[in-house]
Length: 212
Image 1 (cartoon, helix red, strand yellow):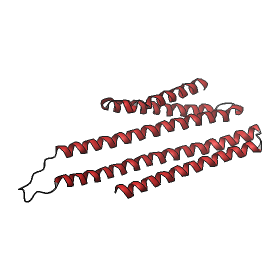
Image 2 (image 1 turned 60 degrees about the vertical axis):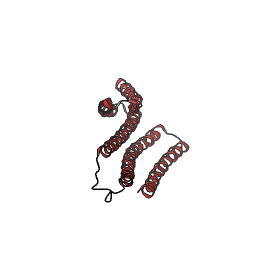
Image 3 (image 1 turned 135 degrees about the vertical axis):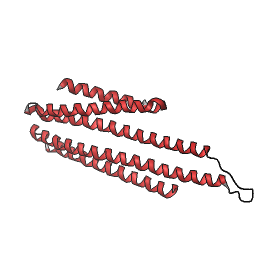
């Protein structure tokens, strides 16, 4: 199990370092690079399933510690998956914006005569602002959805980890003071998650109010 654990941890670190290269990758190669990273993340998830099975086969005195280590790896790879999805969503939004801009620039406008002409520039400016507002909302909602999904995944992992930590603490006979510190940290994590969700909702409200 130790060999597979260290191998998986090393792969997570490699994927984390490669995620930083996405922003500087050219448009022709970024899609292939994303697929490559997603394949590596899927491979890590498969290895984590094997590690979970191996952790259950560990001796009783080492089993809980092994499960905690696997949960930490799972927590890390979920962060990587969320980061990759956020980058993909931003890239899709940018590409859609560029396509609409090119269509707008290539569109030809004609008028019957000078008396029936309309203020094309003002209309185009209004439509452009409206499209930008809609794109900004779509981008923000997509990012918010990805963040909330990541927070839900992290919350599930933290709950499982917290329960297992309590089990380990009971096995090792930790003092009541240490137990209270662990529970206090879990409560703080929950408040941080709720504050993040409220902040995201407030930002979306401001965007709706000022861009719509």
